[in-house]
Length: 413
Image (cartoon, rainbow, N blue to C red; front, side, top):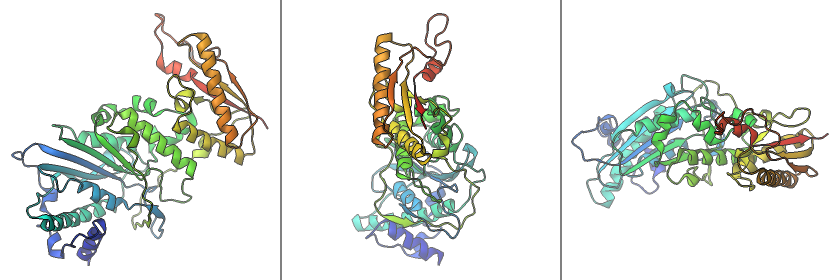
């Protein structure tokens, strides 16, 4: 029965493909999955690394059947087989991850896809057999719970970078299948939201940044971002923030085609099921992380809202303000004043104008979101919160100046 289910799952991956018989997905037919690379083989034409989030936020509890776009196992198999019909040595690696780099569990490492041997029909059948082998390995892996709680997406990306080390193939690709709700390691989204940390700032402070640097120029695809399997699901604003933030992280990583590295969701939802008990995965509290005090909310770093030298709100900035607006309206609070600040780089007059334009942009966006009536004020570099901004020789101190580039949102009743 297990073999039959594997074949059916494979057929679902490739509609119209001849279904392999149980004998075709036997141990001998799948021996290539665990074979060691042959040093005599020609240089790799492609190297594909696929990692699936095995944590409790991405997989439902036993007995639950949330309807979500895409099936992680199917997406993984599709990606692993993407280069099946191309020539040369096509290496693939597959694993799952949890709350740290030590919980990246590799099920397949540097396996060479079988070389098609026949005509189009034969190649299709051979691809179906390979799909059966991979489906069995992938489904077994995702059914295994991580040993460490939490979700460390940056550690998973760093592990993927390590896996690609060595001679670069003609095509290198990393696919991370995850909801993106990183809550431990160098990227904790609750901290990002409460402190307004930019993707570039997080990456710069990440202990794994050397391994993450190995992803530069690599094709990276993030699939499943924003679609967790627990209740209640993320709302539209929260999903938009995650999509924008991970796009910004792709830009910071300098991967190929960074602007489109977050994959578009499938239009067709499927029930996701799991019978595995997984360690508790702390939820990202989007609204709770932006806790308004008596007078205002935590200052928002301008770098999160605006590009350098710009007063046009970024996609991440808009999504952040949408979440904030939802929180304030639920608390029946109004915005009394928006204050823009800059660091001391550039002329004082220019900084004053830039800070005013940024305050105007935030106030206008909040007004369109149902929080009208705020006064917008720009104070330029006049009210720094970090001292000193420069070294005794006059060189700027980037971490200090980043604190001074901010937007304050002062609340009324």
